[in-house]
Image (cartoon, rainbow, N blue to C red; front, side, top):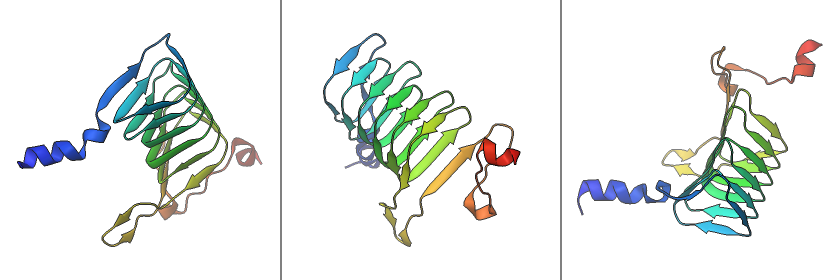
Length: 157
């Protein structure tokens, strides 16, 4: 096997091969090999062996199970991603999530619980879960530099 072929095989589950277009509505369970992009509406469960991407006009009312999830639209339900979840600016997520890595961009709305897991292992041991809070006007803040997150109400006191 050529080196190029082995690289492609590793990324096969990330390949986008399904798109639910704007104006489409699906009721029920959607199971996808590889990745899916949703610009329409799904009421039910979505599972993928790759990435689930919800576009800015996309909506899901139900549960999502995937390797990665990128939310640009609206999700109401639970989400479990074995690697990472990204909430893009102007996205809305209402429900509980479980993931190893979480990025919440400024302008995203998240209401619910998040459980950070440590499922992946590297040669040196387990990988620590990480959260990234992205603010376009400030530098990235991480637990390593003793940054603590406060709500708007706490900051006014």
